[in-house]
Image (cartoon, rainbow, N blue to C red; front, side, top):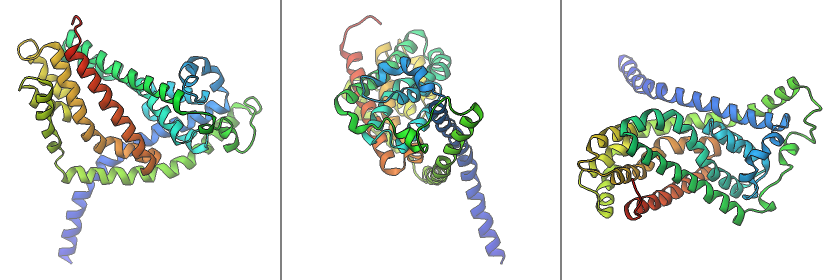
Length: 336
């Protein structure tokens, strides 16, 4: 009996840290997804889509996407998770097929980056790196995100048609034609919440399971081994030897990487090579962040099959456009 109690206490002591790490993540993402799906339903119920259509149609029009998607894209500038939640609602209602959803997610990229300018890059990265290197780095990241968004718009222009979009799906999914002005505000809010709850019941258990598995795996797996590719990357583009440990640190922690490279600018690194080093660290960090954050987040929202497609598209486009930015920084002469 004593052995059983001791074994139980040992297992409990190992489980509690996992639960303590998983619960806040799941709670936060659940809240933001609830907000996103709820806003999507409110946008339809109150006719907000028509009011913001003029602002977002320059994105959705060329990409052959419905106006409702523009609401989700603009919402992403305030909350990436809420914007994704809205897109998940549109996909599950049948408004968007998988191809149209991938295009919408790609267009989201720049607007997801915008919020980080005010919460991370401006208050943290630019002071750490100094004005010149900081602005060059943040500007490079902004142009990379914008390039991905433009790629999404072009993909929608070339690959989407009416076959990929059902513009009446949201109305049909709500149980029939709906006049935005036929119900009072309380009824619209109640109906929006009633349509939100089933999505949460489906998504939250999936989030909890996947996050738990990821946390357990990260505790038994040495992710730092992924940074071993820093050496060939730095050698390939001709960076100084000091770039290798910086890339490794930056891949695991962006702020620590910036603090590591900042004192070396001017002596070891030029502003260009400093930014290139950090961008290469960003490529390696995708492997770490995909495992720790993207997989549980995307799988939780979309499920494993479609979530994998989103991860592949996002990662591939980031790597391609970071590669383009590295080439431009190293080869194109412009004043810095």
